[in-house]
Length: 390
Ligand SMILES: *Cc1c(COP(=O)(O)O)cnc(C)c1O
Image 1 (cartoon, helix red, strand yellow):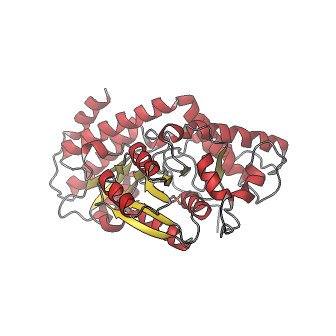
Image 2: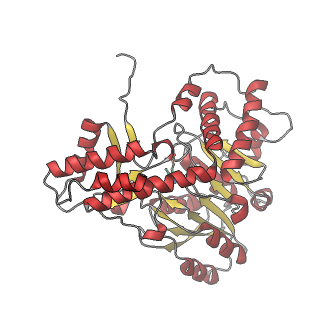
Image 3: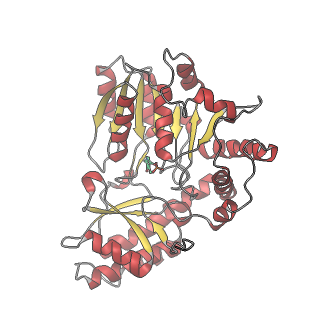
């Protein structure tokens, strides 16, 4: 065995996305203690940078030492008590995981289902809220990475509040790519991930809770079932002002990396990052549509950072993806769940959302598909993209 040297890839799938070189450098800095005063100063900055990314003043804003799925679990284990009724809006894979979380916490999940590729239907949620006036929480995914659909979280949260429900919102794929406004939208508990539009390495989950959510946690009749994720205990380490105490050994270098990724977002500016994601999405779309490929999500609900396109008839999904990987060092995503084998998911997340990546991806797809005899239009995609990028 020898030192592991990974190949250099371009990551245009559903995550992880291309990591910023500055973030990789940050990872290699000297490891210090998790209670070192210098580290604690960095933790304070990290919280402030996360508050900016989430657009919130919530004091309870911090990174959980685990991937996005654990951010999800942190929200559910703290907020859901046995017997609590939770309305879960599902329009793809991740809503299904929310149901699992509710049930494992002893809660009762009421599912509101939409077709994969559609945004969450506000009227269906309203009907469910009327039919279940004992519901305590509404959970939803803002950006469904399995389909590329974005839902109107601002309106859904408002509706949930009119029925006295707290809200849990998944923004793993939206944070840094499209607007997420925790305070303005009134989101009660939110989680995200480090490896999508923040372009950090995987393994960290930013979360934030407002006062209403913390009140529900304080009023719990039962202990949080998870020792590791119990916010009352975690806050002994991540909390404000008071003396910090050991809870678990923080992933020191991974947090340097997140600090650097958030600093880059701060330097670019949220509005500018959102605009860049949108512009590059429009260019990718111009190229793919010129080639003859079509999007599965309706125009107003499309995520700029996750583009799900139909695989042309007669084309073998896996061979195309493996040729892109082997010949172009390019990773795009396969379909997930109900969409497996039917779509490709092309991610334009964070640092991966760049003009050269779009040109590489569409050029490589055109070449591989043409070679396989797929029915596509050739010679028109690149000019269409260049026009959109100009
Ligand atoms: C990726 C993703 C997750 C899970 O994040 P991991 O870091 O893979 O655990 C959850 N929700 C959504 C919408 C995602 O895209």
